[in-house]
Length: 138
Image (cartoon, rainbow, N blue to C red):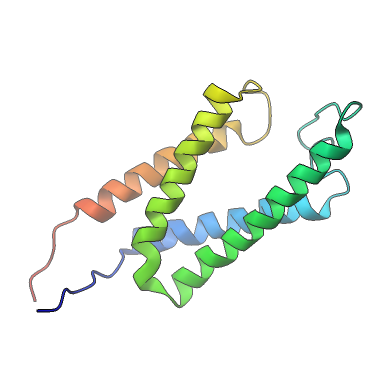
């Protein structure tokens, strides 16, 4: 007996495409802006430890670009991986919430704070939809 792999919904594919594009843009900002966006966008004080902050943000940006490419490749060519990738993105969103608002919070006055919450909510709703929708009998 073989198990059928359920095709991901258009909601899942659309959300992963948006997440992928956002990852590419954020990653490009961190990699290609001279201050990785820390000063000109987030208005962080780079007087002490600025070089380290810029370096770390650029390294995060490289990862975001890679993640964005994976998101878009799954949507375009490797759709059987969309459902597991949705779960991975959801777990990453929950980790981001924990880091941003609990364990290493710098407050809510930086770009992306509201986006972290919105992303976690959207990915949660999409996951509930994706894994809760009824199976159609062939």
